[in-house]
Length: 333
Image 1 (cartoon, one colour):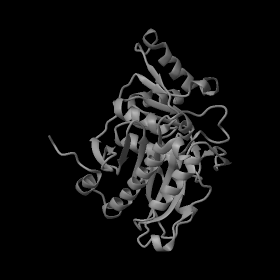
Image 2 (tube, one colour; image 1 turned 45 degrees about the vertical axis):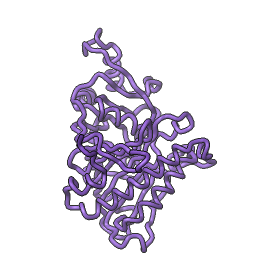
Image 3 (tube, one colour; image 1 turned 90 degrees about the vertical axis):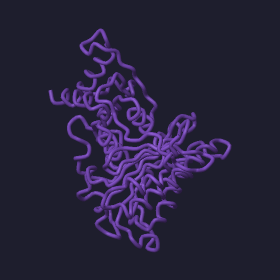
Image 4 (cartoon, one colour; image 1 turned 180 degrees about the vertical axis):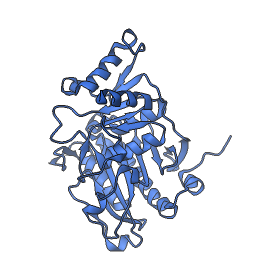
């Protein structure tokens, strides 16, 4: 039986890019933070980590206790490599300045959603963490360094942790997608899902159907076809899923195909969409495309978008390439 590969061994053997020297320690800090968050989540109500805080984040969403616990863990641990010049979190209004003593080699930016799907926390359903690493043009970054010319295609690395029946880490450095599972007794992540690929065709979609009446016509058309199944022009039946956690939805797509959609609807135009470009759409699009899938707003490729704000929102359609191509074509019709 082949000895399983640890995540540290994998980085040493397979991390092939110009940023390798810095990426390995940065990623090990990210993985350490995710392990600690997994432990906190596991404690649940017994540890007093459930419930809402009397505060809202920048998006006007009620924050959970675990949101801020995970946020603090991520900030604390990810300063240790010395390569992070600045951070930005979905839970905080402004960029996070890293203390001078922690950024001796600070050439990179870390963006993260510390607890994706936190509405699931109190009902004990899957949640996750999403992260993205970009090059910084300054060792003392300002807001312009996070925006500027930093399209999603400029990401050096993106990944997520899934906290569920097991804790998993999935990430890409632009050379494919690999998944690792945490062995709880040793605290090691082992390679369990090498070279993850998204099937080009699928019979599964994930969307919040309660918003149907608010969607634009192209999305309604696509969903109507799926619901007609074998009796309609698609001539095959579809399954519908909805977990209300982007990490869980995208992970399922990586494992067995499908599409995930949070499209524009008539409630969202002023906001620009539901999901955040920098913390959710960009990193997940990078992962999906590296696994052979596609990601679009319906109008343009997500990774080509030029960010205009730290908490900018966008419509998101991602997953199996042939289905995304069809949905985009409906938007262009």
